[in-house]
Image (cartoon, rainbow, N blue to C red; front, side, top):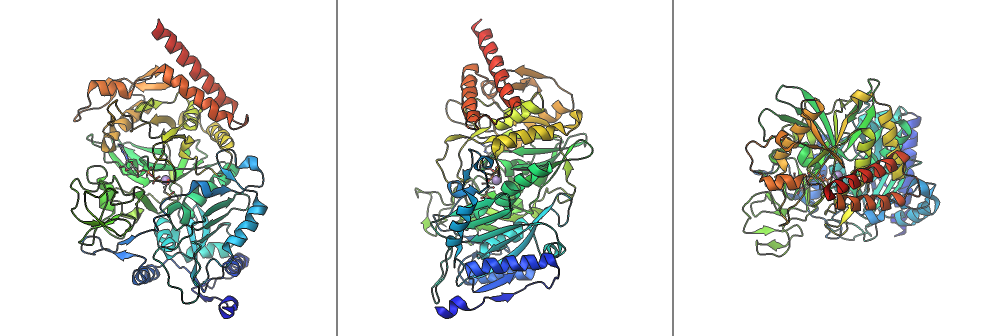
Length: 619
Ligand code: GTP
Ligand code: SPV
Ligand code: MN
């Protein structure tokens, strides 16, 4: 034991750059290693050969199952520990100096105490394992809207995932050596190995921490190997930390997909959309319009960084390089683009395994295979009572593999935004589409989004909760300040060039429980209406909650949506909406008077319009 404790880790792959930046990086790596005590330190260079070697090693060690290359070349299945299947919001902390800067929607932890606690937790946590040093860039390396970071991790699964999801490599280390700012992220699965102890396929710990220090731009994650808990470049950096940087620098880090929509005349528009986790971003990002003449090009499916330009418009990039998408519900009939993207070179996590060595999940095919191995490794048949794939099972695949990816999807300067959508999963009340009357009203709509909970995070499925801007779990600072920041960014735009804001809801249900709207490719019909609205081709109908379509303006050619369903999709019940307004007031009240006056005024004028509508009906 004494020998293992005092021996220095074996180091490999360290790049030979010189300079103060490199010294600082090395010192930080040494400091984390001195705390976590790994057996080895390996600096990742991002090369294909290195990644292949890691994958091979993981297969040999039983951490990954190699899929049959005849069906799924270069692809693997990972099965997590059944207790480690989603983000753990209850264990996610914003450790800002002042509690007020975390705000009521985040778990706050006092930084000095939290640092002391983390020291205890990370002490020796990588014993017997390799600590990988992974330099990554969010956005094109060196791009004007890009930011870089380094993740140290004792999870090889995290490394191969980060290799897909970000731009990893020595070019980033070189920028650091030259003095670029970078974000420090530390990840341990929290499962040290005693000498000779046999490892498990998915090491993790029942105790979990996902801690952000916004003032010093650091992330510490412990105990989980899954998704946003482990790929720290994603939610921890590109949303929680980046939202803090963006507030300071005058830009926005958002939980949004990004697409280019091309109308039948060949004119291109750029649309960003914020929907909560597992509420349709990847699907809309890969939209195949069912109406003739329209095309969609994919730019991003989960995160957008958005900055006001000197031209008075907003410009957006997708800082990621891959998709970490929900598997269940993804099939030929719903998202054929995703199916084509997943032809190979994909890491699947917690999906089912077919006897022929390919994968399966609920919704992949209409017919259900007779015999499968479920996500936990147990035999499964259609009569089994549990799903074959975990509801939050995922695929990890390079964006470049998407057949409709925009040619310039990784252009460093991004694309100008024309439209912003806010949405959620709402069985009632919220219409298929409603247009904001102006920027402040749009920010109000974003701030009031609520949505039924999904399997993307731990919690009660289906429970309605507030998820403003789809950022409830991802805003790194006080959400009321975030609302104010959105208002202030709007103020920097040229009035006629600011994106137009709409709220959408693909998930409204009839009394019998079925979805009223076909969704998926048919969502192009809503996009078509939105584009014709912003080009000034059609009128809308004023309602108390915003502007609604004339139903006759919706292109419904080729689909059968019963007239009653259409009416229900757009029905606004003033009484229910007055209740929504009461809930918004309660939500706003949790911010102790910090919600901007402009949004309080929006709420009051909404109430006024609803009461007027109620009085008109009452006659
Ligand atoms: P995260 O990756 O967790 O942020 O999720 P996401 O917002 O990208 O959601 P995604 O597109 O993966 O969709 C999640 C689930 O919603 C899948 O099961 C989809 O099949 C389903 N879904 C997506 N779009 C629609 C739609 O238009 N209608 C219906 N009914 N379901 C949809
Ligand atoms: C989400 O939950 O919004 C995701 C998956 O995109 S994760 O990366 O785990 O956050
Ligand atoms: Mn997401």
